[in-house]
Length: 219
Image 1 (cartoon, rainbow, N blue to C red):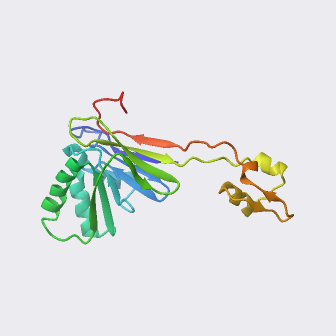
Image 2: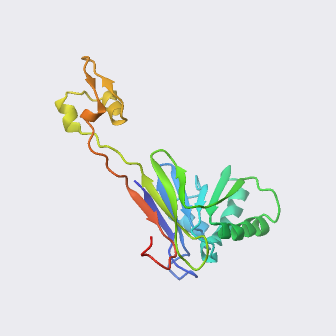
Image 3: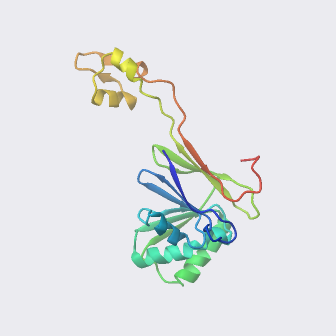
């Protein structure tokens, strides 16, 4: 299951009750920060998430209301040395502005104690974490190289406990092996094939994130 925390939903400028755009997508130990408008690090602290494991930052596009918060975040990460490395993924035009902000303003040519990687985005698979993937797709907006992000669980075949009970498969490691697609031999000598206890493949849950967009009919 994916969880999304909205740190800010305002556009262009913050309002009294809404910060500039930024969201965190969580799944287990994995955390992805999407966009970092001005004031993002304060919103992270207020949300209770903190900075731990927040080492992958995905940027939808390079407008300032989506990237200005990176300056404060990187400054804090470098000063606290809160993590060993940081990956910032964005379109090529956005990466140019991000590079100027981080290396020209925040670091001013100094060598950071944290490894900072700027990764240009292309349409397609971005991360494969085994049980889920993160992919990118193009989004139309008033600036080049805009992207959306799709978080998708892998498809799974459900374990049919009722069939397992009929076959008198005892609880324990045998059922786990069958779920993982492996044939098992029971204590009584019977050989059980996964096809005997697994249902039809079910598509995994998807979470799709789209930032600013001038069109929705082509998403």
